[in-house]
Image 1 (cartoon, rainbow, N blue to C red):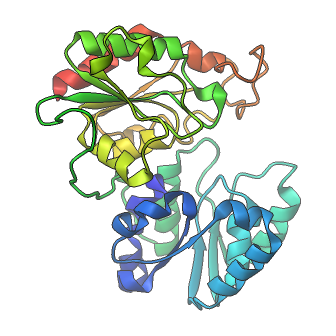
Image 2: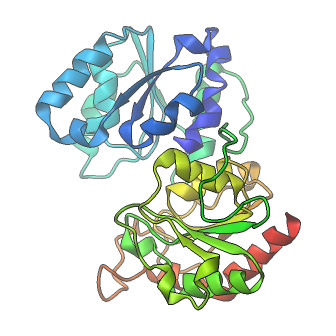
Image 3: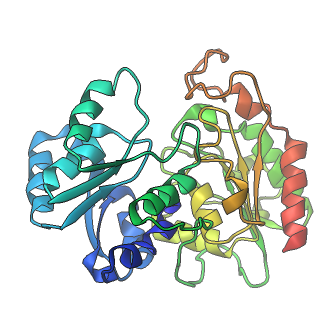
Length: 340
């Protein structure tokens, strides 16, 4: 969603319509922030997990999107599931449909072959591992016949005070995001603890964020509890954006909050592994903001698509992630804090 959002601003001009004539079909996971981020557009939010697993809900969604009755349906993401995105395009049954050519392997070839055969126009946005932001702009450039220059991801958000245990106006804070849905992408907790203590010694507050299933550690591991606020599992998505928006810096694993932080123009350090290096992070030079840093250690096994055979168990960090040193992250963090 974040990497696509800036491209959406070009659609009204490309198709010579108003924003209000564009319907965005979005996921429930980011539904709570959609009314602000997609202000001016029509929105249809669906539960992506129920859509994938519950036939009756899937049928209801199909009937719902059919009623939109658009002239054109578009699907431009590269990494996608045919039974999610492509089946929605098929369900809408618009007079004209345009899709990008997705990432296809032998497992998904049959279903993609069927759905893509139903599409009026296919757009090749480049070979793997072209970055997703560049793909969105290449797609629209091909469809429009114009050369549309890519810009960094950016989202508009409210300027609302953050509800934490200290006054943010007098106490700058750094956000740490040590979690991830995939254990392998989690930089070791001991490294985050070390960074947190460095920040505390510098006189900065530390706010820890994460989902309800990402309560990796709490402030009891620190010697000075007053400087640590652990909000893991305690914030809804809008409040999370408020925290990111007002932070002096964000240090994050390769996961959603990292992209949100960058799009909010908050100084951000992202710890990057090699699973599909370059597809989502690091950002390419064309769209890399000056306040974003991406830390990684190149390894010969990059582009394994996270099918790693170099760790002892599934709870460990991937070697390409754990190999990123504390010194590297601290150096990049100090650069951003000094610039700020």
